[in-house]
Image 1 (cartoon, rainbow, N blue to C red):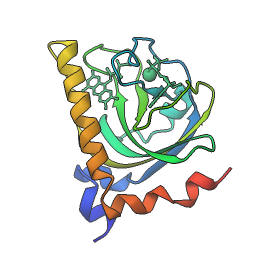
Image 2 (cartoon, rainbow, N blue to C red):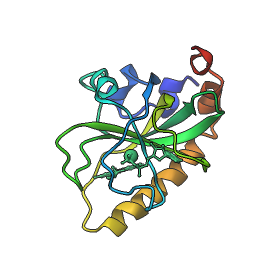
Image 3 (cartoon, helix red, strand yellow):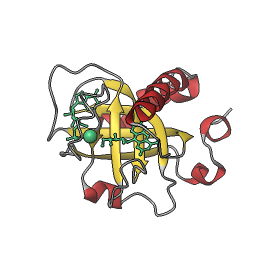
Image 4 (cartoon, protein in one colour):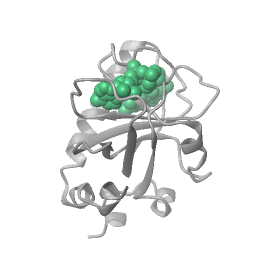
Length: 160
Ligand code: ADP
Ligand code: RBF
Ligand code: MG
């Protein structure tokens, strides 16, 4: 089974996944995602602007590498965060690993493999956090599939 057949949904995303990109980690909205148990490494506008125009906003999973550290699982949000109604589109990556220190300014490489769900609004911050925890679990499980594991060692992560 090819990657397209197994995990690239919705249909329109078949053209774009897997999607590889990289950039420096910048300061995000400073809302204390870290305190909520879900720090997100934000990409600069230059990286967000290179996304294809028809790349669907939503929650995605894939692999991530910070500088020369190992490649880890990641889950990310792409869009305007309806709960916060942001004016600018963002790409924020939560890496499924406990880092000892922040890594602002580091190079972050990601490979996006699959789509989990659209961005949603929530009636409380607790509901948003509960949904994010479920996303983390779903991403972790999806990435254990052989169709995803093969991308963990992709040469993209070793190129300078
Ligand atoms: P900001 O609003 O500046 O993005 P966050 O509260 O989202 O702040 O924290 C993000 C920062 O936390 C990242 O830029 C990174 O330096 C650090 N960080 C530590 N652990 C992780 C992790 N597991 N995933 C993503 N970022 C992490
Ligand atoms: N923000 C939303 O407004 N709606 C969402 O459905 C949503 N889903 C997210 C899923 C994941 C896995 C992550 C990491 C973030 C998500 N966010 C969502 C973004 C969240 O609001 C953001 O990380 C914080 O506002 C900090 O910028
Ligand atoms: Mg962030």
